[in-house]
Length: 378
Ligand code: GLN
Image 1 (tube, helix red, strand yellow):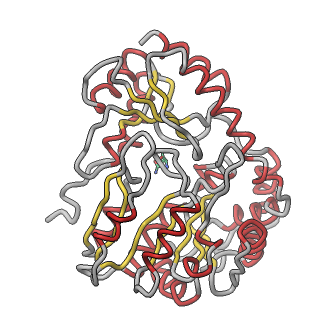
Image 2: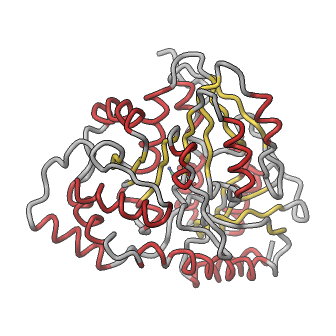
């Protein structure tokens, strides 16, 4: 066959997790917790199955769940989404992102992304015949240079993809970013895809600037979130998309033929679980403790810490340790030191290597202890 994605290999998350498993390393590469989700949530799933909720959910998602998502979104960001027309439950964030891109990107449409960028955006754009326009962000702060974004915009620009809190850099959008973005898209036909899967993982009392907070941005945005990240259950592949009705209508045309609908019993369970807002409001404290603990440990090592304002990722620069390529070093660290990380060059289409590794700290304290202990010997 003629490959539709000749440049694309297997995602780095799959590669590094497989290597970590193969050699028995502590896996701080792919982002997922090594502790279980709430027993109460599991009980709710069991109950839903026992109560016979084992057939298709409605195509856009269980209404009770969409209603809870609407309540949460209004409470947190003041935005009113109509569960009937503007909320769809998806098989995780990745499916929502793919669906949103395929719903609106035509051949030759240009999409602006910021690199390092999560690795699923560019392939989806290319599959639709779209053109990726990327702007590189500079470590350690990875701020968006909005004047450079302005220069990328022309009459083919269809979409800007944002991700806050950001994977892999752990930065967040500020109010200044929002103001710049608003000025830039004003009176322009540009859509926004806002990947907000780490919306609840935000530290030091900072604010998550969801697109949902800003009516002029909200009106042109697909917003993606993830119950896998929020409820420590990445294996359930459960997320959702918010969008104004004119966009959601196109989104659902694709969604219905991509997955039709997603896991019914889990939707029943999450609908119930979301009624207690503490299930998500407790997350910043929960993860900030892990972040602080892990950073304190890493201070004993030769790695240099980059800032972390959100997400469950901590990046480090390793120039003090070696001048190897980040992909080589990540493999060697996994095999020799027994700690797996993600080489950040994987988040650049051109593989730009700034000698930075990304660690996931959504781990039990003893796992973090063991990892730090090994990393101090590097
Ligand atoms: N979002 C996760 C990460 O960045 C990976 C999810 C996946 O492997 N698809 O590590």
